Length: 271
Image (tube, rainbow, N blue to C red; front, side):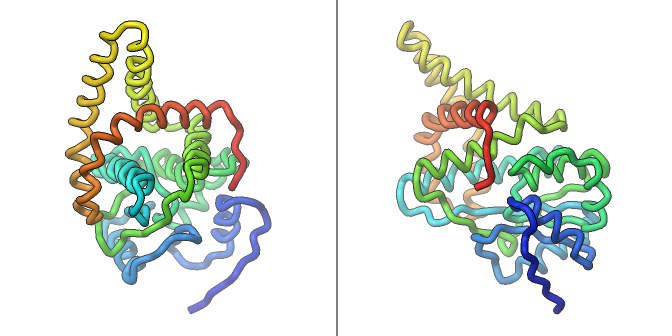
């Protein structure tokens, strides 16, 4: 096995990956984060599916851990919804999300689209911006998602509320630079629906009838989300967290709106 330890020349994961990409020699590139816990058969599980489906990019499941406190449980559940959206959108041929903690792609394909990327000065987004280019140049069928227990990568929950919002704000800060209309449209639909819920809650202080709309919208959102969350929770062996779905639905819209606007209007530096 030929291992190379590189010293990053620039700041941020994106710059480090770009540097490593040009030094790598093999056909397939696998990417994760330094604080992730990898399953024993992660490589063979991902590589086998990647070759079988003849993909350019493969996305894998990411599980937050631990889930002991209420704050940690809500984080895990919220992240499960993101993974479900990632898996579901890829399954219908319209990938709109990905997670750089668990992904792999063709080195040649990544180098080929590198010249079209204009996001290298943006601190985050090593995953999403690359996926955008794969979708643009190779089509939606070039990106897949693997639902396999042997491919589940674990990463830590945020220890504090401040750290949590800093992370989520960093994630949303890159959305203003997206160019794929499907990704942009999906983000806008999610934001507008959650913004409606926040509006009804705030308007209820002036006209109580709006609180009825607030509750109805939360119930509607729960009915839409629960079947999807149940499936991904069972797959990730997180069944006990399903009890927290309804309470989370009352909190989630406020956090989404806050992080969305904080990310869009505040400049973010790499952590």
